[in-house]
Length: 334
Ligand SMILES: Nc1nc2c(ncn2[C@@H]2O[C@H](COP(=O)(O)OP(=O)(O)O)[C@@H](O)[C@H]2O)c(=O)[nH]1
Ligand SMILES: [Mg+2]
Image 1: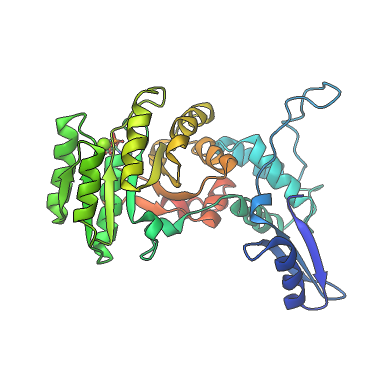
Image 2 (image 1 turned 90 degrees about the horizontal axis):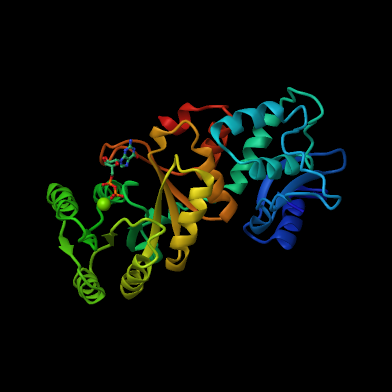
Protein backbone atom coordinates (compact mmCIF):
# COMPACT_ATOMS: atom_id res chain seq x y z
CA UNK A 1 0.00 0.00 0.00
CA UNK A 2 1.38 3.40 -0.95
CA UNK A 3 -0.35 5.41 1.76
CA UNK A 4 -1.79 4.42 5.11
CA UNK A 5 -4.22 6.21 7.42
CA UNK A 6 -3.47 6.54 11.14
CA UNK A 7 -6.01 7.80 13.66
CA UNK A 8 -5.56 8.71 17.31
CA UNK A 9 -7.03 11.01 19.92
CA UNK A 10 -4.22 13.53 19.60
CA UNK A 11 -1.88 14.53 16.78
CA UNK A 12 1.31 13.49 18.65
CA UNK A 13 -0.26 10.05 19.29
CA UNK A 14 -1.18 9.69 15.61
CA UNK A 15 2.35 10.69 14.60
CA UNK A 16 3.71 8.15 17.07
CA UNK A 17 1.72 5.44 15.31
CA UNK A 18 3.10 6.67 11.99
CA UNK A 19 6.65 6.51 13.31
CA UNK A 20 6.15 3.04 14.80
CA UNK A 21 4.91 1.61 11.54
CA UNK A 22 6.68 3.67 8.88
CA UNK A 23 9.88 4.73 10.65
CA UNK A 24 11.41 8.12 11.37
CA UNK A 25 11.57 9.06 7.69
CA UNK A 26 7.84 8.52 7.14
CA UNK A 27 6.33 10.77 4.48
CA UNK A 28 3.37 12.62 5.97
CA UNK A 29 1.01 13.59 3.17
CA UNK A 30 -1.93 14.90 5.16
CA UNK A 31 -2.95 15.64 8.75
CA UNK A 32 -6.41 16.76 9.78
CA UNK A 33 -8.72 16.80 12.78
CA UNK A 34 -11.58 14.31 12.80
CA UNK A 35 -14.66 14.08 15.04
CA UNK A 36 -12.81 11.81 17.46
CA UNK A 37 -9.22 13.05 17.19
CA UNK A 38 -6.68 13.29 14.41
CA UNK A 39 -6.06 11.55 11.11
CA UNK A 40 -2.62 11.33 9.50
CA UNK A 41 -2.07 9.91 6.04
CA UNK A 42 1.52 8.74 5.63
CA UNK A 43 3.81 6.31 3.84
CA UNK A 44 7.20 4.73 4.32
CA UNK A 45 9.70 6.42 2.00
CA UNK A 46 10.45 3.11 0.28
CA UNK A 47 6.72 2.50 -0.23
CA UNK A 48 6.43 5.71 -2.16
CA UNK A 49 7.65 4.19 -5.39
CA UNK A 50 5.41 3.62 -8.33
CA UNK A 51 4.65 -0.04 -8.93
CA UNK A 52 5.58 -1.32 -12.37
CA UNK A 53 2.73 -0.89 -14.82
CA UNK A 54 1.44 -4.26 -15.94
CA UNK A 55 1.44 -4.47 -19.70
CA UNK A 56 -1.70 -6.62 -19.68
CA UNK A 57 -3.97 -7.69 -16.89
CA UNK A 58 -4.48 -11.37 -16.10
CA UNK A 59 -7.29 -11.77 -18.62
CA UNK A 60 -4.98 -10.43 -21.30
CA UNK A 61 -6.91 -7.19 -21.78
CA UNK A 62 -4.90 -4.10 -22.72
CA UNK A 63 -4.29 -1.68 -19.85
CA UNK A 64 -6.55 1.34 -19.48
CA UNK A 65 -3.67 3.77 -19.37
CA UNK A 66 -5.46 6.81 -20.70
CA UNK A 67 -8.42 6.87 -18.25
CA UNK A 68 -8.13 9.03 -15.20
CA UNK A 69 -10.69 9.89 -12.58
CA UNK A 70 -12.58 13.07 -13.44
CA UNK A 71 -10.97 15.06 -10.65
CA UNK A 72 -7.46 13.97 -11.55
CA UNK A 73 -7.89 14.41 -15.32
CA UNK A 74 -6.73 18.06 -15.56
CA UNK A 75 -3.69 17.25 -13.41
CA UNK A 76 -2.88 14.20 -15.53
CA UNK A 77 -3.30 16.26 -18.72
CA UNK A 78 -0.85 18.92 -17.59
CA UNK A 79 1.64 16.42 -16.21
CA UNK A 80 1.47 14.38 -19.42
CA UNK A 81 2.26 17.38 -21.59
CA UNK A 82 5.14 18.08 -19.17
CA UNK A 83 6.35 14.58 -20.06
CA UNK A 84 5.62 12.78 -16.79
CA UNK A 85 5.06 9.04 -17.22
CA UNK A 86 1.73 7.26 -16.72
CA UNK A 87 3.49 5.03 -14.22
CA UNK A 88 4.23 7.91 -11.85
CA UNK A 89 0.84 9.52 -12.46
CA UNK A 90 -0.94 6.24 -11.66
CA UNK A 91 0.98 6.05 -8.37
CA UNK A 92 -0.10 9.60 -7.51
CA UNK A 93 -3.73 8.97 -8.42
CA UNK A 94 -3.77 5.71 -6.45
CA UNK A 95 -2.35 7.48 -3.43
CA UNK A 96 -4.94 10.26 -3.70
CA UNK A 97 -7.71 7.66 -3.59
CA UNK A 98 -6.65 7.03 0.02
CA UNK A 99 -7.15 10.65 1.06
CA UNK A 100 -10.19 12.81 1.75
CA UNK A 101 -10.17 14.37 -1.71
CA UNK A 102 -13.11 13.60 -3.97
CA UNK A 103 -11.74 12.43 -7.32
CA UNK A 104 -15.14 11.71 -8.80
CA UNK A 105 -15.66 15.36 -9.60
CA UNK A 106 -13.47 18.16 -10.91
CA UNK A 107 -12.42 21.09 -8.78
CA UNK A 108 -12.07 19.70 -5.24
CA UNK A 109 -10.16 22.58 -3.60
CA UNK A 110 -8.00 20.15 -1.60
CA UNK A 111 -6.73 18.42 -4.74
CA UNK A 112 -3.92 20.80 -5.85
CA UNK A 113 -2.30 20.72 -2.41
CA UNK A 114 -2.63 16.97 -1.93
CA UNK A 115 -1.57 16.07 -5.47
CA UNK A 116 1.50 18.27 -4.95
CA UNK A 117 2.33 16.59 -1.62
CA UNK A 118 1.96 13.10 -3.02
CA UNK A 119 4.11 13.76 -6.08
CA UNK A 120 6.64 15.63 -3.95
CA UNK A 121 6.86 12.57 -1.70
CA UNK A 122 7.88 10.50 -4.72
CA UNK A 123 10.69 12.85 -5.72
CA UNK A 124 13.77 12.07 -3.65
CA UNK A 125 15.99 15.11 -3.51
CA UNK A 126 19.62 15.24 -2.44
CA UNK A 127 20.46 18.58 -0.78
CA UNK A 128 23.27 16.73 1.03
CA UNK A 129 25.38 16.90 -2.15
CA UNK A 130 26.26 20.48 -1.19
CA UNK A 131 26.08 20.12 2.59
CA UNK A 132 29.23 21.32 4.35
CA UNK A 133 29.52 18.18 6.48
CA UNK A 134 28.65 15.62 3.80
CA UNK A 135 31.86 13.57 3.74
CA UNK A 136 30.24 11.22 1.26
CA UNK A 137 30.12 13.98 -1.38
CA UNK A 138 33.43 15.63 -0.51
CA UNK A 139 35.10 14.23 -3.60
CA UNK A 140 32.48 14.59 -6.27
CA UNK A 141 32.89 13.24 -9.81
CA UNK A 142 30.61 14.53 -12.53
CA UNK A 143 29.79 11.74 -14.93
CA UNK A 144 27.45 11.30 -17.86
CA UNK A 145 27.14 11.18 -21.64
CA UNK A 146 28.97 13.59 -23.95
CA UNK A 147 27.89 17.20 -24.06
CA UNK A 148 25.29 17.04 -21.27
CA UNK A 149 26.98 19.85 -19.33
CA UNK A 150 29.28 18.03 -16.88
CA UNK A 151 32.07 20.60 -17.06
CA UNK A 152 29.66 23.53 -16.93
CA UNK A 153 27.82 22.01 -13.96
CA UNK A 154 31.13 21.37 -12.21
CA UNK A 155 32.04 25.03 -12.66
CA UNK A 156 28.65 26.10 -11.28
CA UNK A 157 28.97 23.84 -8.22
CA UNK A 158 32.58 24.93 -7.69
CA UNK A 159 31.54 28.58 -7.91
CA UNK A 160 28.81 28.01 -5.33
CA UNK A 161 31.19 26.22 -3.00
CA UNK A 162 33.69 29.07 -3.34
CA UNK A 163 31.07 31.65 -2.49
CA UNK A 164 30.17 29.62 0.62
CA UNK A 165 33.80 30.10 1.63
CA UNK A 166 34.85 26.48 1.10
CA UNK A 167 38.39 25.55 0.09
CA UNK A 168 38.11 23.61 -3.12
CA UNK A 169 40.23 22.02 -5.82
CA UNK A 170 39.41 20.83 -9.30
CA UNK A 171 40.87 17.73 -10.91
CA UNK A 172 40.08 16.52 -14.39
CA UNK A 173 40.21 13.01 -15.76
CA UNK A 174 38.98 14.32 -19.09
CA UNK A 175 42.12 14.22 -21.19
CA UNK A 176 40.24 13.17 -24.32
CA UNK A 177 40.35 16.66 -25.85
CA UNK A 178 42.94 19.36 -25.16
CA UNK A 179 40.21 21.99 -25.39
CA UNK A 180 38.28 20.32 -22.55
CA UNK A 181 41.30 20.62 -20.22
CA UNK A 182 41.86 24.25 -21.19
CA UNK A 183 38.17 25.08 -20.71
CA UNK A 184 38.30 23.87 -17.13
CA UNK A 185 41.71 25.37 -16.43
CA UNK A 186 40.30 28.76 -17.46
CA UNK A 187 37.37 28.31 -15.02
CA UNK A 188 39.75 27.32 -12.24
CA UNK A 189 42.06 30.31 -12.94
CA UNK A 190 39.09 32.65 -12.93
CA UNK A 191 38.02 31.32 -9.53
CA UNK A 192 41.62 31.18 -8.32
CA UNK A 193 41.43 27.56 -7.22
CA UNK A 194 43.99 24.74 -7.69
CA UNK A 195 43.58 22.73 -10.87
CA UNK A 196 45.27 19.50 -11.92
CA UNK A 197 45.03 16.85 -14.62
CA UNK A 198 44.95 13.15 -13.71
CA UNK A 199 45.85 10.69 -16.47
CA UNK A 200 45.61 7.55 -14.36
CA UNK A 201 44.00 6.23 -11.19
CA UNK A 202 47.38 6.59 -9.47
CA UNK A 203 47.53 10.28 -10.48
CA UNK A 204 44.04 10.80 -9.13
CA UNK A 205 44.85 9.16 -5.81
CA UNK A 206 48.03 11.26 -5.47
CA UNK A 207 46.23 14.51 -6.32
CA UNK A 208 43.40 13.79 -3.91
CA UNK A 209 45.97 13.14 -1.22
CA UNK A 210 47.67 16.47 -2.05
CA UNK A 211 44.34 18.24 -1.67
CA UNK A 212 43.28 16.39 1.46
CA UNK A 213 42.94 19.70 3.32
CA UNK A 214 40.30 21.00 0.91
CA UNK A 215 36.67 20.98 1.96
CA UNK A 216 35.69 19.66 -1.43
CA UNK A 217 37.32 18.35 -4.60
CA UNK A 218 35.47 18.32 -7.91
CA UNK A 219 36.47 15.72 -10.48
CA UNK A 220 35.56 16.17 -14.13
CA UNK A 221 35.35 13.12 -16.37
CA UNK A 222 35.28 12.34 -20.07
CA UNK A 223 31.82 12.06 -21.56
CA UNK A 224 31.21 8.73 -23.19
CA UNK A 225 28.31 7.34 -25.08
CA UNK A 226 26.44 5.04 -22.71
CA UNK A 227 26.83 2.41 -25.43
CA UNK A 228 30.64 2.59 -25.23
CA UNK A 229 30.99 -0.38 -22.92
CA UNK A 230 34.79 -0.41 -23.04
CA UNK A 231 35.09 3.05 -21.50
CA UNK A 232 33.00 2.34 -18.41
CA UNK A 233 35.35 -0.06 -16.58
CA UNK A 234 38.21 2.46 -16.93
CA UNK A 235 36.08 5.26 -15.48
CA UNK A 236 34.79 2.94 -12.75
CA UNK A 237 38.36 1.96 -11.81
CA UNK A 238 39.44 5.61 -11.64
CA UNK A 239 36.50 6.72 -9.51
CA UNK A 240 36.83 3.79 -7.14
CA UNK A 241 40.54 4.50 -6.73
CA UNK A 242 39.67 8.07 -5.80
CA UNK A 243 36.73 7.10 -3.56
CA UNK A 244 34.61 9.59 -5.52
CA UNK A 245 30.85 10.00 -5.23
CA UNK A 246 29.20 10.15 -8.66
CA UNK A 247 26.85 12.88 -9.76
CA UNK A 248 25.24 11.74 -13.00
CA UNK A 249 24.45 14.61 -15.35
CA UNK A 250 21.55 13.88 -17.65
CA UNK A 251 19.98 16.32 -20.10
CA UNK A 252 16.40 17.00 -19.00
CA UNK A 253 15.18 16.55 -22.56
CA UNK A 254 16.37 12.93 -22.76
CA UNK A 255 13.64 10.48 -23.77
CA UNK A 256 12.58 7.92 -21.14
CA UNK A 257 14.02 4.98 -23.07
CA UNK A 258 17.36 6.71 -23.50
CA UNK A 259 17.42 7.59 -19.78
CA UNK A 260 17.19 3.86 -19.04
CA UNK A 261 20.18 3.19 -21.30
CA UNK A 262 22.18 5.87 -19.47
CA UNK A 263 21.20 4.59 -16.01
CA UNK A 264 22.12 1.04 -16.95
CA UNK A 265 25.50 2.12 -18.32
CA UNK A 266 26.38 4.24 -15.27
CA UNK A 267 24.91 2.01 -12.56
CA UNK A 268 28.12 -0.05 -12.13
CA UNK A 269 29.79 3.21 -11.02
CA UNK A 270 27.11 3.71 -8.39
CA UNK A 271 24.94 6.76 -9.10
CA UNK A 272 24.90 8.78 -5.89
CA UNK A 273 22.71 11.57 -7.25
CA UNK A 274 21.39 12.90 -10.55
CA UNK A 275 21.54 16.43 -11.91
CA UNK A 276 19.10 17.24 -14.71
CA UNK A 277 20.85 19.68 -17.05
CA UNK A 278 19.55 21.85 -19.89
CA UNK A 279 16.16 22.08 -18.18
CA UNK A 280 15.76 25.37 -20.07
CA UNK A 281 16.09 23.64 -23.44
CA UNK A 282 13.12 21.31 -23.23
CA UNK A 283 9.35 21.68 -22.96
CA UNK A 284 8.96 18.17 -21.55
CA UNK A 285 11.50 17.58 -18.77
CA UNK A 286 9.00 15.22 -17.13
CA UNK A 287 10.24 12.17 -19.06
CA UNK A 288 13.69 12.41 -17.54
CA UNK A 289 12.24 13.44 -14.17
CA UNK A 290 9.94 10.41 -14.14
CA UNK A 291 12.83 8.13 -15.13
CA UNK A 292 14.76 9.40 -12.09
CA UNK A 293 11.72 8.96 -9.82
CA UNK A 294 10.96 5.48 -11.13
CA UNK A 295 14.53 4.38 -10.37
CA UNK A 296 14.28 5.89 -6.89
CA UNK A 297 17.41 7.96 -7.58
CA UNK A 298 18.05 11.16 -5.60
CA UNK A 299 17.82 14.35 -7.66
CA UNK A 300 20.27 17.02 -6.56
CA UNK A 301 20.10 19.93 -9.04
CA UNK A 302 18.47 21.38 -12.11
CA UNK A 303 20.62 23.33 -14.55
CA UNK A 304 18.70 26.03 -16.33
CA UNK A 305 21.15 27.72 -18.68
CA UNK A 306 24.76 28.28 -19.72
CA UNK A 307 25.65 31.00 -17.26
CA UNK A 308 28.23 30.05 -14.61
CA UNK A 309 27.56 29.92 -11.70
CA UNK A 310 24.05 31.42 -11.81
CA UNK A 311 22.09 28.90 -13.87
CA UNK A 312 21.68 26.08 -11.35
CA UNK A 313 18.99 25.32 -8.79
CA UNK A 314 18.96 22.93 -5.87
CA UNK A 315 16.21 20.41 -6.64
CA UNK A 316 13.22 20.87 -4.33
CA UNK A 317 10.39 18.38 -4.48
CA UNK A 318 7.49 20.70 -3.75
CA UNK A 319 8.12 23.39 -6.43
CA UNK A 320 8.94 20.63 -8.91
CA UNK A 321 5.62 18.91 -8.23
CA UNK A 322 3.80 22.22 -8.58
CA UNK A 323 5.50 22.81 -11.93
CA UNK A 324 4.55 19.33 -13.15
CA UNK A 325 0.89 20.07 -12.42
CA UNK A 326 1.08 23.61 -13.82
CA UNK A 327 0.26 25.14 -10.45
CA UNK A 328 3.14 27.57 -10.40
CA UNK A 329 5.69 27.29 -13.12
CA UNK A 330 7.72 30.35 -12.16
CA UNK A 331 9.07 28.69 -9.00
CA UNK A 332 11.19 26.28 -11.01
CA UNK A 333 12.29 28.56 -13.81
CA UNK A 334 12.96 31.72 -11.77
N1 LIG B 1 21.04 25.73 -22.32
C1 LIG B 1 21.89 25.11 -21.51
N2 LIG B 1 23.13 24.82 -21.94
C2 LIG B 1 23.97 24.20 -21.11
C3 LIG B 1 23.59 23.82 -19.80
N3 LIG B 1 24.65 23.19 -19.22
C4 LIG B 1 25.64 23.20 -20.15
N4 LIG B 1 25.24 23.79 -21.29
C5 LIG B 1 25.98 23.97 -22.54
O1 LIG B 1 26.16 22.70 -23.14
C6 LIG B 1 27.41 22.65 -23.84
C7 LIG B 1 28.23 21.47 -23.37
O2 LIG B 1 28.59 21.70 -22.02
P1 LIG B 1 29.83 20.98 -21.32
O3 LIG B 1 29.84 21.43 -19.90
O4 LIG B 1 31.08 21.21 -22.10
O5 LIG B 1 29.39 19.45 -21.46
P2 LIG B 1 30.22 18.14 -21.10
O6 LIG B 1 30.74 17.61 -22.40
O7 LIG B 1 29.23 17.19 -20.51
O8 LIG B 1 31.30 18.52 -20.15
C8 LIG B 1 28.09 23.99 -23.59
O9 LIG B 1 27.82 24.84 -24.69
C9 LIG B 1 27.38 24.52 -22.33
O10 LIG B 1 27.39 25.92 -22.24
C10 LIG B 1 22.26 24.15 -19.35
O11 LIG B 1 21.82 23.85 -18.24
N5 LIG B 1 21.46 24.78 -20.25
MG1 LIG C 1 33.36 18.32 -20.28
